[in-house]
Length: 286
Image (cartoon, rainbow, N blue to C red):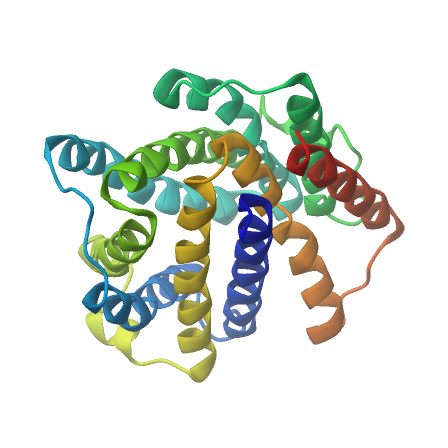
């Protein structure tokens, strides 16, 4: 199976995970939802680990993991901080910039070079995702204007930069240890580290993590599936290309919102969707 198909399936799984998580938002805050969805990814991936062995777990693997985990945890909780102090329409659009940062981080860490066609495709995907994340009535430049006065917008841009590093470091570790093994291993580790961090910060009690609803379990299962598909894709294609196609999760998320939650598919979102589809087509053929 090609990296583009795997990345697209990863995007579908991520959008499904987000959809199940969204259904919990009326009862749980973001801290609890984030902890639960990671925790309930563990059973599926632990089962995968029982039937998978690593290619290698040498010094390079552990050094990469030691760099990767603090960045991943920092990004997860900076995300929470950013959306808690800022309107979503001013902060979330900046999350779409991860593939742009990866044009540079993938070259620095992995030595990957991208074609002009691929870079154009990335820019179209990012532009489309940016538009999809704008709130109704927001103007295109509003999030950029907010950077100088809104810490949430600046924080989310930092999250995008952190994810550009975790994506390339994750690929490096997966190439050393094996895509399926690392996808399972890494999300099992996150399934314990992220809830534990929330508990140590006083945001949750241990019972908050395990006392849950079926939607949280489904969100975790879809997140675990996304992790496996992501690392299978990223070890077969250039990291920036894979993550840009994976950003199609924003489009799938909007469609899920329209079908499951009755959210309106506003006209500007049609434009954003068209940009994303065109960009993904360019990237997948670069």
